[in-house]
Image (cartoon, rainbow, N blue to C red):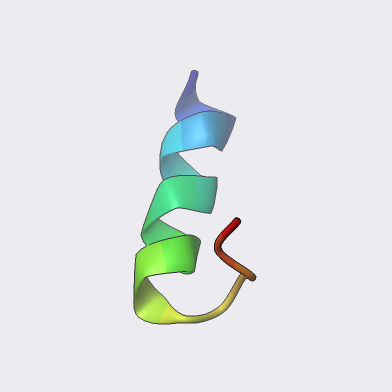
Length: 19
């Protein structure tokens, strides 16, 4: 669940691609 939270944060910050 922590991993999911980190990915969500990265997505919002623009570090990951939001799909």
